[in-house]
Image 1: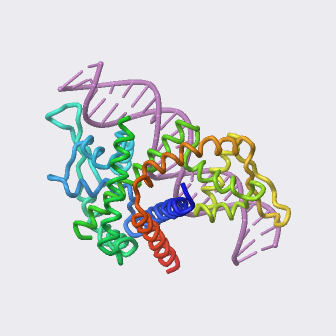
Image 2: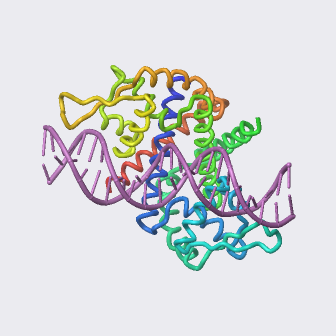
Image 3: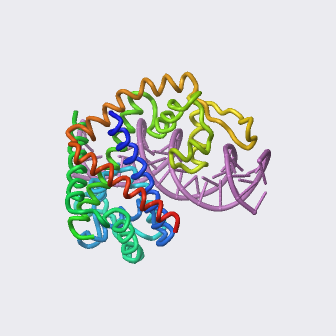
Length: 149
Length: 149
DNA sequence: CAAGATTGATAGATCAATCTTA
DNA sequence: TAAGATTGATCTATCAATCTTG
């Protein structure tokens, strides 16, 4: 890495770490949710019947199964989600958003989205946004390629 | 967030999570180091006399003191760093890179840097790199502003 | 009291091993 | 045997409380 690449890389690392920490603290303070909670709640709130199969949720989050299972156990204890047996495939399980879970995500979302907008997207022109998106897509493609080999 | 912003944001989140996981696993497999170990070792290896004050290292990493303290305890157990009392300020402490620590970072760095280059920087044209850098800088500035208020 | 640093408790992430059903 | 999911062990991160010196 040349000097410019190194500076870019370090700035990017510092930014991502601080941005995640900031959003996480805000969310926790305002709504009692962590970013991980939020990540789980969003797909559930958008899913038909507020429920998803474990593997579908894990795939969508790109999480390992065991991570999701532990996370759901904690969220279940707090009443945000519930587990239900799957009738079609008796190995399987559904995760279901509870009423409390829906309330939590609906109350947390506006402030969180506003924070993301003001920190990240405000004043980002179309060119920069396209650069950001294509950059993310490119790196994701390369990660997929690297995982296969 | 409109649809395009949401897609950009989700792609970015997925990319950062997977990139960090990938780099971490690679580093761990190839060199027995975590990304956190690496982050700590780099500034130490660049510091005069291979030593830094705790607070200086914490500031540079943008880590909380307690996180750094715990991390160093683990690295100290593995022989990668040592602690030394500070004579000027008797509250203070130095962290010093050991010989084993220097060996570890020097052996780990080339493959890690190459992974970053091939996943992130390869095929990034000057315009995109400048966009990435200015984007990181802007968000960092806003985070600073948000922390103050 | 403030600054530098550490500690202990708790929550979260990762890995390997396990259990059940297809 | 493989797929869906859970568990337990271990490592890491975060928060509040503490200790010591300026």
